[in-house]
Length: 472
Image (cartoon, rainbow, N blue to C red):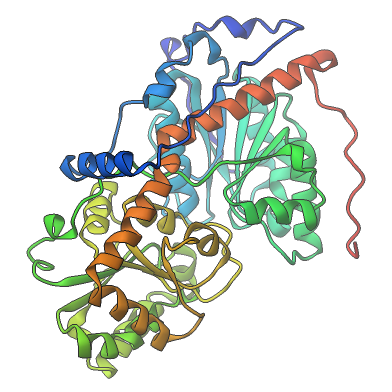
């Protein structure tokens, strides 16, 4: 069994907070998040200020966060999930969420229990206090023991079926069964047609979680319709994004892309992403706009690489050569840093997510591009349909290179339409920046903690709800 934990220094858990006294009567103030001002003058002022800002990640909490009294931040949180430098979307999300909570509320209250895949070990930062071996059931029990002995008030589980061991990730249930504090679970995938094992695992997670966080209305509805989770147990918090400026792409193009029109896709490479459809669209795009270059940034997904090596990016390169567009397709086949990614996204004239399947509940890369104010072309998977509604992006059919080409040409032919799309995307995404998301998570944590303290002995009921039958 491969289990590690790190002891925190004595000073690392000094967290002087009034609400840690566990009084029988506990109230939580609801701090309203102000609605964005979408007046014409406000839009112009916001965009003007944004265009003047340097390309940096914001580290100062928003003014509405500063209005929250410090004594209302009671919870010390153990976050369970993947963490950088592991290369996957959940690791990036967990890292960004912890960073955002740290910026808004201070570092001492958060640590991470990281899940390691079977073939890898990682050099984690000190925030990671315990490591779970994905396929080793006993390490989940050990993790539960460690968390229960660590004087934390709440667990935030990052759930994705593929990151935990057992059938459909069932090993994580062993951990949840032995926790005594409230659990808030973020669901990165909610399936429309789960198999029996997936159904049971999700039902058990829902039963053992005090709150469930989803990132889209569609996921919330699926939880209610498919998994019979009551709506009052679900919170909708969008995928977080860095607070990037609204800037002209030409300001951030490097020596390679200067003078060129950049189409960009980034993220871990796997065959379900559909990048070949953009490559197939390039000849038609280039016939109208000869200076276009398509940049594919990201390493092959580690799970795909273990199975197939770099077969998929090699297939893409071969396709580009066959179509005569190899000079217009650039592969940055590596896991890039946040700073490099920010610069890449800023340099893009059009961002493309050509995913091949509808059942994509969340796309962090799409959220990122939306928050950077990019003109976006996407297939209509679930998250894209929701985020790009009302003209915030161009939706094209699945597996349709001609439609991608037509959408790109329309946007490149019409600067005004492209700018309008960018502006709508940027303003819509202001409620998705990480400091807002950190505040929203903390409100859920407070609510869960308060509700548990109001129960007899501060514990959840021992009996689980009756399982949903497989044929329900």
